[in-house]
Structure formats: C-alpha cells, structure tokens
Image (tube, rainbow over all chains, first blue to last red; front, side, top):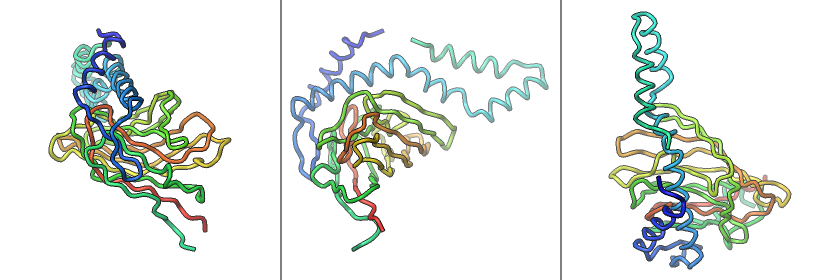
Length: 99
Length: 173
C-alpha cells in the first residue's frame, strides 16, 4: 500500500505530464499558476489516497445490491434453509477487502 | 426592476481543468444564487468533479467542506457523506470519459454575503455512466468558515472538462 508521499510523487508526475492545464476565469482562458499546479497535485494525491483507503466502502455499497434484493435473498434463505445472502455478503467483503 | 433570475455570468468551459463563476461578476445584491452546469463531459476516466467556494475570487482549499447527499441510481440507492473535506464532491462514482458520460446539475447558494454565517448550498445533480446507469444525487453542503464569499469554482482531480456553466442571482421582490 502506497504512502501519501508516494502518491504525491505519482500525482506530481501525472500533473507534469498533463501540462499545460487551463482555468477559465471571467470567460478568460488562463494557464494554471504555480500555486494552481501545486493545488492540483495535492488534490490528485488526496483523491488517490481516499480511493486507496476508502474505495472499498463504495465498491461494497454497489456490490451488495439494493436493500430490497437483499431482503428477498434473506426471505428465500429463511424459507428454503439456504445461505445465499450470507454467502453473497461474504463474497462482496472478500472481493473488496479493507486496505 | 426585473424580478426573478438575473444572469450574472455565463461561461462555456472548453477543455478546462477549473472554472470560476462569480468573483468580479459577483453582485452582493441578492440573498440567494443559483449555479448550474449542463452537458459537462470529461477527458479523463476515473476523475472526480468537485466544487469550492471563492473568497475574494480565490478558491478555498482548507478541509472545511461538509457534505450530506443521497444518491438515487437507476440500479440502487446510496447515501454519501463527507466531513471536513478539502472540496465538495459532485460526482458519486468516478466520472468517466466514455461516449454518453455527462453531468448536469444546479445548486441554490445561500449565506454567501453574510460574514457571520457559513456559506451553504443544496440542490440536485445527475450523471450518466458508461453503463447507461443514471445517478441522481441530491443534498447539500457547507464550508465551515464564517466569511463572505463571492462565487464558486468547479474542478476535476485529473484531466479536463467541457460544458456550460451559469450563475444567477435571485432578485428580491
């Protein structure tokens, strides 16, 4: 797992490769200032950090499926004596592990 | 005096990484404002589309943005919340650059001219994913710093974006 410093190095390289970047202010197109580039690196590095550290939450949220579908699984498990819902949750967790 | 929405700024972003609305085009004559963006497309895959408030025309980057939003997708329902982030996040999933992936939305801005209150906003925004999944997000946010503000800026964490942006003041009756 990358440290924030390593991700900042990665982000710096990506922003360098993407230069020049532009902002629009008062309908005028201006190249980023040094401060803007520095902020872009910080934003990209933090975004990478968030994805690395917390991306599994969103991935799990999507993979779990809707509450309605999960309740349906639980109902069928209760009626049929199966473990579909429990297995599904376990699979989602193992497929999207915490860092 | 005209009533209703008064256009303060209209700008078309073309392969920009950031766009500011307000600043010298800001007017303190209004209590509330509406900012909207439409048909926004992105050059990079897996980027985040975000917003910040302006103070004196400068985007505020301190981690004081709080957010509470609900996401209603055509395939599921999610909640999303951030406390003390460095920006307000508009995209739920990473925004992509495939054909058909676009974002649009509007926010009502309030308390921007009041130095003793936190600027806040609420509204709704949508994005279409490359799978065709439609995500509607609604909710609001604030910047936890009591200071007058004079606009907002939009940016992506990587790549560029293009789209139509407008800022309106809502005229007092």
